[in-house]
Amino acid sequence: MERVVSPAEARQAIAEARREAKTIGLVPTMGALHEGHLALVRASCRRAGYTAVSIFVNPTQFGEGEDFDAYPRDMARDLELLAAEGVDLVFTPGVEHMYPAGSSIAVDPGDLAERWEGAIRPAHFRGVATVVAKLFNITTPDLAFFGEKDYQQLKIVQRMAADLDMAVTVVGCPIVRDQDGVALSSRNAYLTGEEAAQAIALCEALEAAAEAVAWGERDAAAVEQTMAEEVSAFRLVELDYAVVVDPRTLEQVTRIEGPTRALIAVTLGDTRLIDNAALEPPPVRVEDEKDAQEE
Ligand code: AMP
Image (tube, rainbow, N blue to C red; front, side, top):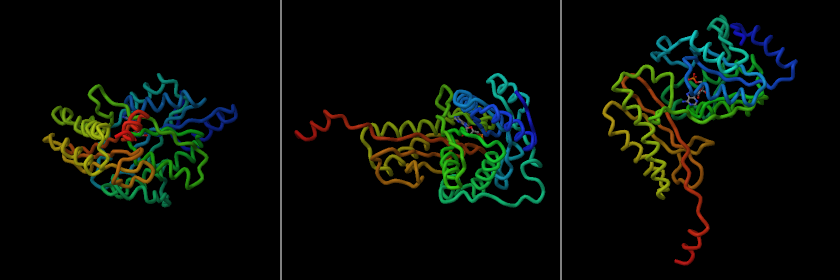
């Protein structure tokens, strides 16, 4: 596994892989790697002949007073984990490489970035879209792997690639959870023991939403209410939003008739946590239709 820190070195390493006609896969991360990240790495190793992983805690996606300085960093461990997965290239630039003095152009993340996380963290998706565009330009991936864990981010990156004619396929990968159902996140490391025990609030709310839909609830507001009630049972958890949205536009829906997505965000102590799940009514069985006609 090769490790490079400058964009020029990354370009050179990737140019060699290109000469060998390898498909390039990119997995952008902020490090403090866990099984969620490693699932993306494995997806890339399966589908691409050459896998590059970037580790960069991107300052432009953190707002004032957010956790940029405190964000967990463990480069030695990350490099070991990635070497064990058979990664070809790790790109670990410093802030001075990604944002040299004088850089001033950024990517406007568009309408998808206005609501939910974007409303609470105003400059966040501009920072994300900009750094991801830069990483795409440096590494020129054929495939880039992102987790559904950050669903709004995944949708914005897919939109950006389409709208800006980037020659990359952005692949969404399923959320990896611990044995209790809690979505893995580098930020879980911030939680105290008591807080960690309450982090199940998010997945329990999402499960309650899925159950309500499975039992026939089609009114999105009622499902949102179910999620809010579920969260209210957890003393340390403050709900930021629990909504049912159209998976393409991320706009709230009123009825759950086809594929929708439940998005949830909470504050637990000083830590913000997000999660989401697909919500879809079960397919109507032919017998049900017949029964309905006969009634
Ligand atoms: P981060 O290091 O938090 O910026 O995340 C890097 C990538 O890993 C993003 O595409 C995330 O969506 C993805 N990711 C983080 N946690 C998970 C998880 N629990 N399951 C799947 N993907 C994840």
